[in-house]
Image (cartoon, rainbow, N blue to C red; front, side, top):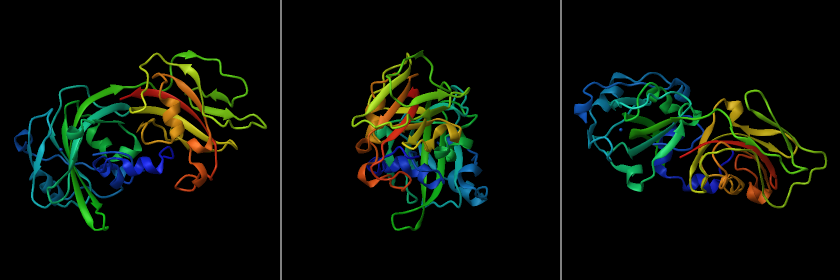
Length: 326
């Protein structure tokens, strides 16, 4: 995903990166009483890892983890040195709330431990539960274990990765699903007449946008955030996490990133995106569709994007459907 600034990625919580960074996704966030579940249930997302099923040893390793603490509070994991060969999960507690399905915005609390049993981080400690779209490919490791579970479920996830010196390691997380809500598939609200001279937005039957950039169009020196559809949801704040459908174009009309093409919206913190997104989305309302024309200095500036896909000094155009906010 090309929305993030390099600084945003670097400052993300290490514990939150544990799951997605080793699951074969694009890296964004992520992540858990023996008496609650005597038998271990283990699964693996083939889409996320492309690897084999967990071995008997992997399953036994998770079954041996002791989870102390009641649901709703920060748990403590106790185990000896642990390694797994592939991502492995175990249901510790089944929930009794809403059933989880792909396309829902799921909110979770979690703790992360290293393979020696040392605590790496906790969303309970920082009071920062994390939301994501179930089925988002960046969270592919969680799709199979969570679909069909219910709000309130607690699940252990052990994931093979590498440490800072590139040595094999395993990270163990316990996550607790605290909420799940259905979100709309596209922006819904009152149409707004845009200012003259801006790129023209056309929507397909499913809501996917395309743009026509006028001949000779001169990108503005300041950010343009033109509301196209005014939603009636809450106002988005700059420190929140939003779920959105979007497409981004360079000024020659070429698409460089699109959640529509990937087939699912994306959740992200407005503190981990380019400044034009933070400033352009904050203050909008949930349900809105917004046209962003972003000057280079509020996009990737003189360096271009870290992966080289966006050249230096490139202004950008986005159409964003704001579907939900944490």
